[in-house]
Image: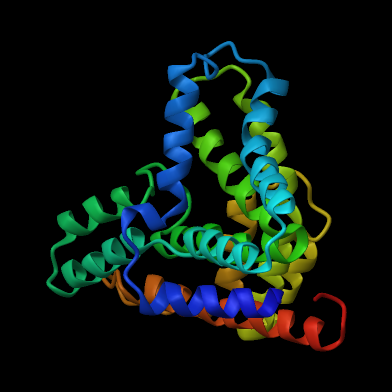
Length: 274
């Protein structure tokens, strides 16, 4: 069923328009608003309470489905949650607008779109490398979390990522604990995703980079993914060309999503996962 869920969710994400109420952030943001109204999410909140906050929605959802124990409801809820977690039409549309502005030579508008996509002006990564990270967050990470931890993993990871961003923006003292948990949770999925880059890109070029990061526990996940991706895909662009690098790396990321699905299919056929 894991493979079927992934295939159906990816198909629906590509073929159906996704309104606001069909995006995971819509519900997670409402959850955070509720925590604020109840004064649970303050600057002095403890690490243990923060941990409970990102774990609770997933635990409650899984517990509710277990109590109901109706196969069709479990199927529908699991598929809907996975559909909400995978992809982000807003980011994809902003990226398309960036390409249109770049083709028209409107550099200032391109800079606005890169900022809307979350790339800071002082970021050491390029725009294409940032898109690789966004693709990981919206596709590879929820897919891998679903395969490993099931529905709970998808919900918990989404809550953790959003709470971490909120904690950083609002200077919550215990946000460093969320950063550490997120770093640990991302460690294996990042290396799985980066290994996919080897197989769908230039294996011999990227292998030394991937091996160098294999047991590295200090380098940030963004940099690991960026460096392996660049090594796995030759990007040659002329001065002033701001489209070749991002489009090339986005194509690499898309191929990698298909690779993850293929691996899940092999594991399903071999009986490793159900």
